[in-house]
Length: 265
Image (cartoon, rainbow, N blue to C red; front, top):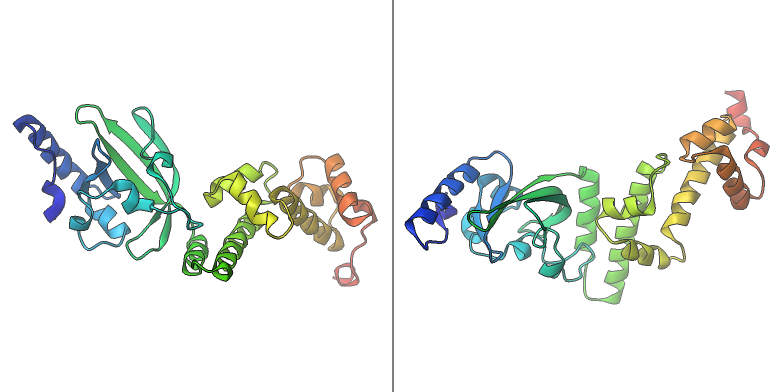
């Protein structure tokens, strides 16, 4: 792989260290690359090159690591390097979740980890995909809809909001699922999350609660008991469930009667 010999050359001993590091990294089966002390890509292995859609490492080595991975956030806004947890990671080891963007502009959700190499001042970055094809498809749709016009921005925010609803529907039954968890899984800040729902006059917390209550109401109509509906819709206790249910529907869960179709089945 032609680019794997790009390394700093101050003395003979560091050259040998970089050569050994390049050989080890290049043969690893997982995406790996080495970020130099100044933030540029020093080594990119075959798995990383393939994952990001490049032909070889020539287009990567020597370039700014942050910009090559994710110069923009998912909502299209600029992503300054000094806000990047990879570049700003403190200590010898660090890990987290981010969205990387391929050469073609496709977003790829990843779990990443870094390890600082104290002898060279460089950092080894490894990353693996974390999201389902469906989640990736939603993100790709959002990026395709991104455009400078107001209408395009509104479409983009609507697509991103649809993705948030998909996450809520997948996770609402977990009683510990929170707005912070939703923001983490969607790779946006809580403030951005609140702004997206404010576009339609709602809040993320109220939408999670609404989806839980509507699911519980459907269970009650199908003949399930109140305790079962409470537990399976993500509420921790019957008391809070009953109060939220009454506020939402104007009557208690015990007053819901199974539908005719459910009763006859």
